[in-house]
Picture 1 (cartoon, rainbow, N blue to C red):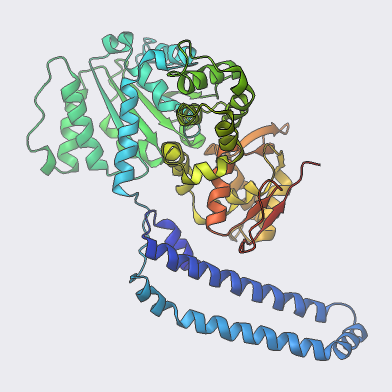
Picture 2 (picture 1 turned 45 degrees about the vertical axis):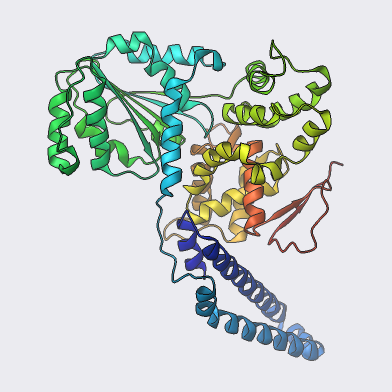
Length: 503
């Protein structure tokens, strides 16, 4: 059942029937875990202590133990019958089998690509707090160094990486400096031949002469595509943007197609993964870690989106200011979240409406279509995780908002929960620490404090990532948080419960 759930988790787009089937199997897996836990607990109690103690325990508790074992056996028989019914249930839901695949749904993939390319046309007046970062990228692009260089912009989903790179890429100084340019959206899955075709089209059409793209490009194979691209780029100073890079293998796949003729060519990439951004690439490289917006910039961006139609100077009405500041604080400087929430609130004028959204943000993230764009982008990071890493990440939402999670405590909790994979030759602590570092490098956990050796000492979740984790956890019955603000559901069957008070 665990293997089935891992395979199902790897398939991004499930039908409603498949979702119901997976939910049934997950529920059965939870029931099996409960039975095993209860049985192991009883066995250890019977085997604890000396010989006389064990004999005394067995004698006194014999009737009770007999009843407990009968109850466990009855539960096991029920589970066995449910497992045998799985094929019948699959037919009921209209599901033959679930294929393991990591490919995104075509519509989502197309949407992500369109979102990235639309950043090329964002007006300057709609941007806040990126001018210094833009100037730094422009300087790296045009610094006159002859060796080909790689410039990486790293940040969590929605931090404005693509928008920043687009503004540097479209700068007049940059456009004059290079002979040809190309903007390529990579995304989570890519085909190397399709990428080469896209690069050839982009480079050919981006030149002033607008050279004709080879007509038989669609039928060419890897070697032919590579030959055309390399021969075209060799005499030119080029710049290429690789937007939304998820795999460290991409550079190995594309390196040979981007010749280094020591004429100042540049490669820019955006990624959520710090490990990819920090790679040496075997050439000169620069890494820019994009920081959240400051409070002043965040407030200015929110007011620009929330009050553009209701106020000529885009100022916040005094009666809404406290709630508006609270909403901006929840965004923690994340531009995508600020823009999405600002757009949502632009249609609301009553203080009661603002309070309702602020107090039920988790519900709005799950049900409000106006926040779908933000949710889709943030969930891309979650969907890219392995099954075990997803469990580790979701577990972190059990801690209160802005809670400093100690590294040692967290990895011990993961180990106790069984999230840590057993790997020969590596201790469970080392495996758990690697899980933590992966989440940090992917910008899904934020390091708050480091020890003298540079290892994370404590970390926390971004407020909106935590809200999304809570929403996902409730759907999968992974965990639930009760903070007294909402009535606890009697039908809730979450595996883990975190009770939080403000005292």
